[in-house]
Length: 227
Image (cartoon, rainbow, N blue to C red; front, side, top):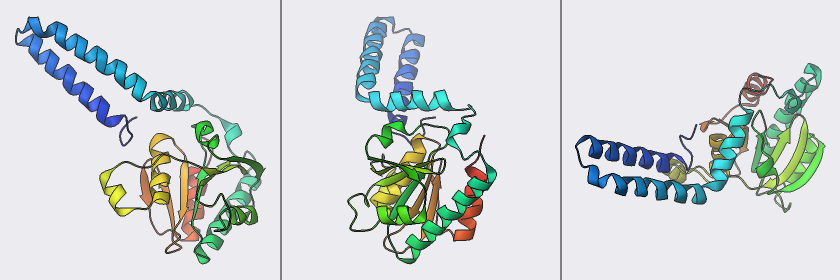
């Protein structure tokens, strides 16, 4: 659940502390037991304070896993197909014009916390609207657009960045944000590179690079559906 997130390293350290304290007790150093109990207690208390937002987000996401939240998807197959076609057309237009973009598709995990960081739009998804939001002159072009069902919910949203060292070295902020949101939620991230115009898709903390529009449509049809 936490692999690849900011909670992973603290939990690994907690496991080490528990293992060392267990070995200490097993070896007969019972006089150190109060020290280990106090250390672990204060470590947990400090971690709960420092990582409160991450813990809350993890709890919310877990509560949504496995539920059939059909309201978060386009229920009518014809409308769903139309939405995917329009999404692919928007990405194709952005790619041809080498306009950088980051589009997030909400699935089962709520993106409420991230929606609140942007500007509420709540409008029907159209390629023209998405292109307007990502124009370089637009004040919202640097943030992410979050889509729920076939509606653009918010634009200019701020997302968590992937923290892996190799990702930091190789990728820019837009791609790191695309991976970061998929590490913490089950959302799909579509990125259009401003430098090359190439389209990429991120899911579960991994990125598929340089996707053709036809392949993108097939991948979205498979992954953006009721579960």
